Length: 101
Image (cartoon, rainbow, N blue to C red; front, side, top):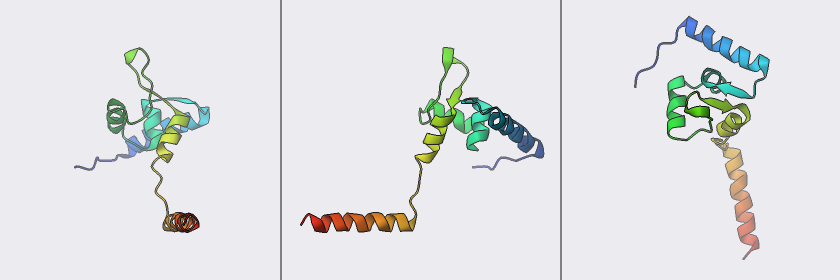
């Protein structure tokens, strides 16, 4: 897999898109805005939509749109628990298991 070359212009373009989306506080984002919001490449977002792994809207079967709150929820689904959280869950499970014996 090759790493895409990041140019200053591409960073400026992404920053402009993200700034516009944040400043306008839009709830519905187009592909470019969603890419800037999530930090994912346009092509990867297309892949996620084609495999129906990310919530999206395609009115009249053409342009892609994303709901900001749905994107935030989708991003948060991939939470990885910290070691402390895992230990606390294990302790709680053991406590419940001992109580039922």
